[in-house]
Length: 97
Image 1 (spheres, helix red, strand yellow):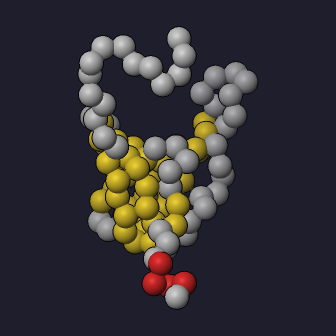
Image 2 (cartoon, helix red, strand yellow):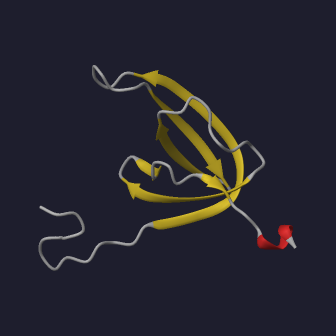
């Protein structure tokens, strides 16, 4: 089936977005999920007092503690999971004037 087409008339729930100051980062891993898959690292991050989990193949995050960050996430029974490749520094246009 071609990409972009969905079955049924179900509305997709919009992605949740968060932004704030990165307060702490803890890394677990590397984990081997199955043979042939690259190593995965799990990060437990705290942004403005809220805890999130982030899973990626990168051994280092593109952000550091103290940075203003923005990302998309979803809430599950296991907690709040950041979408892959959505974590980045928040850019304030006033800084570039």
